[in-house]
Amino acid sequence: MKREGMGEKMKRFFRILGKNALFFLLTLFVGLLFSALSVSTPLLSGNLITAVTSDFAHSGTAFFLFLSASVVRIIFAQLDQYMGESLKIRQKSQMRKKLYAAFSMGSFVHADRKSEMISFINNDVPNIAESYILGAVDILKCISRINLCKN
Image 1 (tube, rainbow, N blue to C red):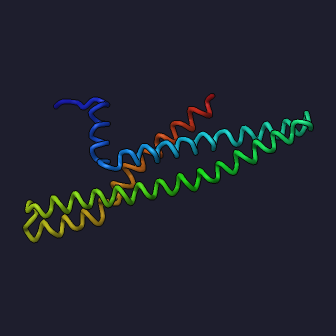
Image 2: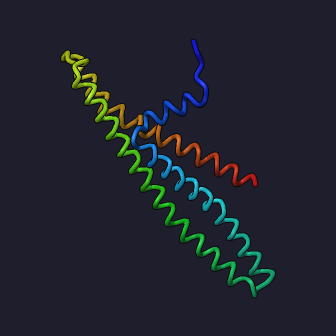
Image 3: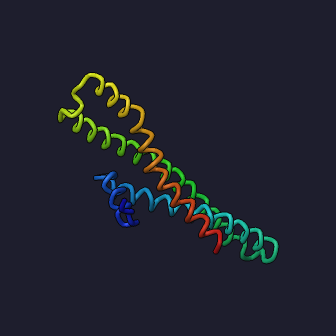
């Protein structure tokens, strides 16, 4: 049995994404930016406390930076949530369309196969879209947070 290389796995992954590949990358970008903000905001909070306790003159700048980063973080948290849900909906729709097209080509004409196919479309496709596609985004966000925390 031939083992797939990482490049082949990525090609297969992007083939599954189909026309949603660009939206996936945009969702990933927003998620990674949100992850960076999630790590940097507590660091700014620490700098704010240091500025207030040691040099009160610079505390206004530190407070402004902390407040700005917090607002941007809230915006990106909502944007990350929205993009993830939108990607899930888009991917489910695309996968269902492809399955219905394959189903209508006649390979599942038998009555016993129709119920299996409908069950797959209604039950498994949402799980695949959420676990496989959004799971990849979540894993990459976690890895980025771990790497940012190490630095």
